[in-house]
Image 1 (spheres, rainbow, N blue to C red):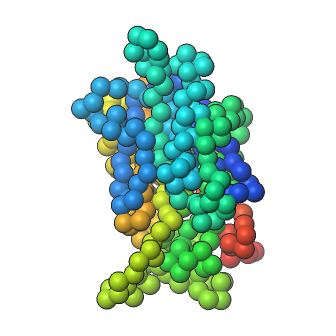
Image 2 (cartoon, rainbow, N blue to C red):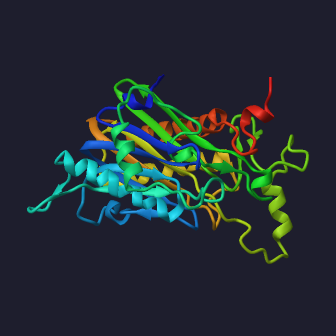
Image 3 (tube, rainbow, N blue to C red):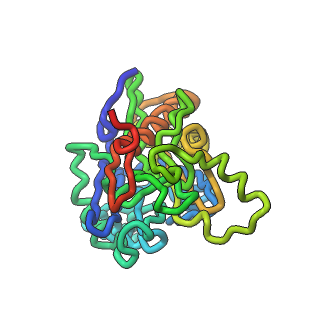
Length: 323
């Protein structure tokens, strides 16, 4: 088993576009030849597109792109640009009179960080596709992670910067990778040590308040809008041959990685979502894929945090964990 670039996975491309001034962006995974996909949504406040198509009971058997975007529900507009890009390449589900690109996706809430009037739109989605050249795998304040933050129990003043992370592994011919935009309400934990590496800060802004323990203060209080502005959205990609049921199961299994690295997770104001897709190149046991999916997702989440940079006074990992 060894580490590979996420973009080494067969027949996928990854592209990003961001607005660093207004702090929002989107990330697009293209699978132009089509890929079998599934999804598992566990957060209580999701913003998603075309996820019903991924139900094994429904007609569509392959997708052509997955969008991860900032901008809350407004950011779903970026999918229009992805569809335009694919249609121009004559890629899509053939309905006789046209080919309809199958573009699914999910959004996170970053409106409170940058300019709430500027969100990913059709043009940004199109440019993210143009940027999908697979030459690099940038992380941190990039794409859907541009305006991401974590640890918002006490508001943005005591939150920390989240971001986008990627990680992939290869075992034999099997490749499994994760890309994730980490914008959690909760703290991010190193699962090997149990240490909080990013999250809600205390008043001194050098130590952690521990969001899970702080949650207990809400037990007899009626708090409104305390939990707004969150969501971790990610993708597992593999070159394995899988069907829609297996893709959905892999997405479900991978939520264990969220649970091990984010506390609390899947709150009523997180839209936590994981997509899983397979490009059909190698045969592999679904349990092996699931184990690897959790490994790569955990690492991608940690890399998203460690690669992020401070913005607008919101501290990043390197500001707290100085050498």
